Image (cartoon, rainbow, N blue to C red; front, side):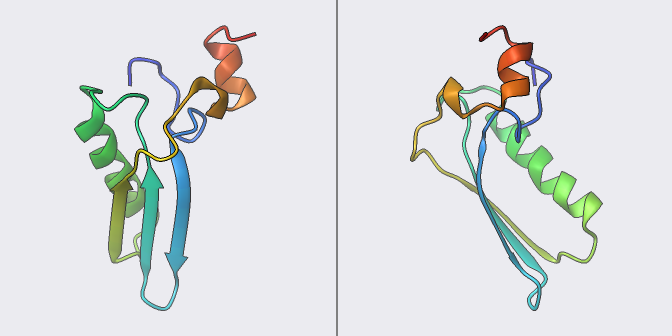
Length: 86
């Protein structure tokens, strides 16, 4: 949150699986560090963002994963530019 860059551009979303028949979605995502104090809020925000934008989805699973471990190379070019990686 303190970076003001969304989780997609930060490269924190690893996989999204949608089951249209079951109206469910599974999201594998990570954080920039295991001790991230904003971690619980980021996961909650991801859940409610899906719920708000896709009301037909009835089963939302946000899975916190650590493999592969996140690194700055996973960010989009836009995020890297915003954070001065160029």
